Picture 1: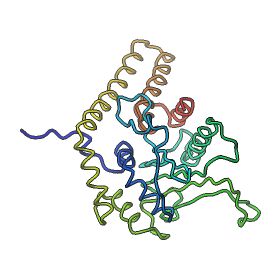
Picture 2: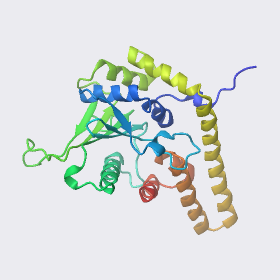
Picture 3: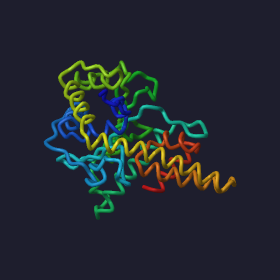
Length: 280
């Protein structure tokens, strides 16, 4: 009997669902951070363990970005970006999204009773399959500096990194370049990407993941169908609009990206971003 091929089999590391599963393999994630930051990390811990480690779709609180702390209490937020999101006003949204993630990281720490001077160093890291800044850099790292004297840095210990998998300028380690190549074309060119590829095969063969991903897809379809049906029953513009908002909230809780939710509900990316911020 021929084995049925699910959509999970077609996923690559560029998919945020699969990306998160791979990043939850401590050895791989730690190595990527070490190679990016040119430092040795003794250990990493996944923050908000229940929500972060429960990547299976029967969790209502699913997150598809990865939040980590290392042994020095530096905090990291990692996310895959396949498309360059644009709002209904035509503005690119990634810069503002960095503010959203920074606020989440800082707020979580302060809610635990920390004073401002105890805030941990943070890195927000986007893996981008496009060159947002169009300067061909492999890595764009941002820290706050004085505009009147660029040698003066504001020591808030917050950094933002955009990784451009298509970049040709700037030095990266061989393993990071091979990772970029693997993300771009799914080609193994190093021992490290062989480990990543083998891990992906292992994940895809995990029955729990396969069953959960199938449930995940079904819930997405059911949620969209339910929203459309309720909108038709209401028969009014106001009712349809309200149901779109309700559907968007459910899809976000299921872990869909802002872009996919906007596409599925016909809401603007800007509207979905606002809903996501309100749910945070």
